[in-house]
Amino acid sequence: MLQQGGFHVEDDRKKFKATQYIKCMVPMLVVGIVLASVILALSVLTLTKINKKVDEIQIHKQRSITGLARSQQSSNSFLSSSIRIDEVMSHLNELQRIATASNGTRAVNTLGFNRTLDYITNYLKANTNLKVTHSFFNIKDFQLARDPVLISSMNGVIKNYTYSTNLSVADFYHVEFSTSLNLSTFTQITVIPNVACSDNDWNTAIPPPAGRIVLVKRGICPFQDKVQLAEKYNAKAVLLYNDGQTPERISPVEISVSQENTLPVLFLSFTVGQALATASQTAPKNVSVRLVIDVKDLPPLPVGNICADTPTGDPTQTIIIGSHSDSVPGGPGINDNGSGSAANLALAVALARLFRTPSYHKFRYRVRFCWWGAEEIGLLGSDHHVKQAKNSSIIGERLSDYLVNLNYDMLASPNYIFGIYDGRTAKNDTPAQALPGSNKITSLFRDWFVEQHLPWDYTDFSGRSDYGPFLAEGIVAGGLFSGASGVKSVEQRNRYDAILGQGLGGIPDITEDPCYHKACDSIENINIFAYEKMVQAAAYALENLGRKEDLRSWLYPRKRMP
Ligand SMILES: *[C@@H]1O[C@H](CO)[C@@H](O)[C@H](O)[C@H]1NC(C)=O
Ligand SMILES: *[C@@H]1O[C@H](CO)[C@@H](O)[C@H](O)[C@H]1NC(C)=O
Ligand SMILES: *[C@@H]1O[C@H](CO)[C@@H](O)[C@H](O)[C@H]1NC(C)=O
Ligand SMILES: *[C@@H]1O[C@H](CO)[C@@H](O)[C@H](O)[C@H]1NC(C)=O
Ligand SMILES: *[C@@H]1O[C@H](CO)[C@@H](O)[C@H](O)[C@H]1NC(C)=O
Ligand SMILES: *[C@@H]1O[C@H](CO)[C@@H](O)[C@H](O)[C@H]1NC(C)=O
Ligand SMILES: *[C@@H]1O[C@H](CO)[C@@H](O)[C@H](O)[C@H]1NC(C)=O
Ligand SMILES: *[C@@H]1O[C@H](CO)[C@@H](O)[C@H](O)[C@H]1NC(C)=O
Ligand SMILES: [Zn+2]
Image 1: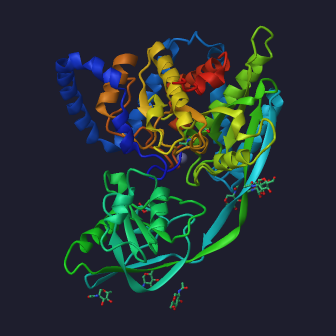
Image 2: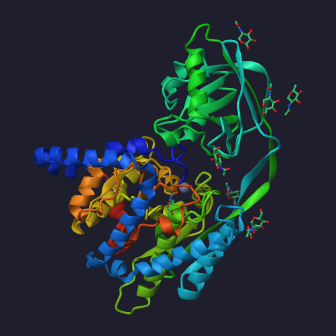
Image 3: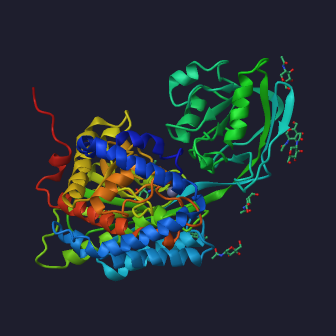
């Protein structure tokens, strides 16, 4: 999963709760209030033991694994019941082994990434008759020629800020794909109102942003969108800053902007950003900065995508299932996105195995499983694939040959939610043809969770993962997400506890994955109970779509003639 704020905004997701369950709970309001008070008291206690929380998750996971034994098997899908969780876990263990042997990471441009691709390819070749293809594309590479410098003058007081690769001590940090700038004279800043996501924010900024350094707060939309608006309004450089909403949101964050970006960008801590914003409101309102960003371009880096196709099924009607194969540089990426990658591999192997069973009817549609490279630095692998498809005239490789993209990112978050992309929250500029089908995919997953007596939540569908490039071109999309930096609410914990049994609902008031994008995102960070359910849901959805009489009409219903 791309860094939140960059590519998912957990704040928004809270608006899209599973409302029907909330409605069901209304009659139980009185009971609920009593319960909530007890739980509130308990969670206050929990809050006082912050350093014990990760331990609690471990205990919770143990219980979850015990819960696995009595969890019911899904009976409504051959594919779903033919996938074994130990098989999925063996792939995940292999990814952990690769990370451990490769300096703890599987990020692009590391041996760990190449070894991940080799593992997936070799496993598919040895165990399936799927047609495996590799495609390489280049991404920009850069190096800082020297540490960047940031100096401010706030109403006459000069301050020189600390750059450090240790983000917990840094005042500011560089941004990947920023351009260079040597601003040796103080230049005034303009504070963009709100969170700089709308034209209105930029048009009402005083003084106007053109030619100035703009100060932009984190929130609501991806950082890339904010920086694109800064380009549109001719800003000279962008200072992004954290929003301070929780203790983890004070330090600067490591992010990247688009490879096509043309502006110098730095990321400031909440403390520094807030000080600059406050000084700009204080007479004589003379706030300016000097800065140096010195970036050296390096030769482009090759990054690989892998796709594996069923040899049967109509190539002009393809179901494409994706997960990302890279991790962030700072960790092994076992939940993010090893869990998606391993699930996708197990799904591919299980389908190929079933297709060898004579009594199992093969799908009418081709299925293509893909592992995208460079998701963590801007959905580059999936974006490349979509661009190629748009430009292709080869049957089976054209964009028009894709019916639907299912995306599996993080599926095994320790303090998980059963998150379903909510088709209704697609971005406003999503082509209308993709909407009815995407909403149907949402319902398909939701109905499965309901039928399995499992809780679920809607989760953000604004394109901040590898399905984004497909959806933006009008291809129906959907998928699952077990949560990253969103905080599990008391309401969610209660609802999950009520359905799954006391103690299985997770821990409220902490994030869904405390190891998100960290070195501790290891094999220890996996909730096997949640993972198995998510993999079964993914298998069910694939088989259900594969069995449709006319999938294209189901996903893209024609408008009725007037
Ligand atoms: C691990 O890092 C060290 C030091 O940077 C480097 O020499 C070594 O080649 C790396 N090993 C792998 C497997 O990437
Ligand atoms: C990874 O593989 C690519 C393509 O074969 C190669 O160019 C690159 O040097 C490899 N990277 C590492 C770190 O081994
Ligand atoms: C600001 O700090 C940097 C790094 O500590 C130092 O290299 C630079 O000379 C300082 N600049 C000024 C104007 O003090
Ligand atoms: C980063 O700085 C903090 C605070 O000084 C320190 O505790 C931590 O060990 C440092 N981390 C690294 C990786 O150097
Ligand atoms: C920035 O420009 C100043 C004055 O033009 C020059 O003295 C300085 O060396 C430059 N710094 C960098 C890092 O290029
Ligand atoms: C504003 O501050 C800058 C930088 O310290 C200074 O050069 C400039 O003269 C100040 N402008 C006014 C109007 O005080
Ligand atoms: C993880 O992989 C899935 C499946 O390809 C991908 O669609 C998704 O974007 C990735 N998730 C995240 C959060 O990076
Ligand atoms: C599209 O295809 C044409 C002809 O094959 C090729 O020349 C061109 O570079 C391609 N464009 C992109 C963006 O891949
Ligand atoms: Zn990620």
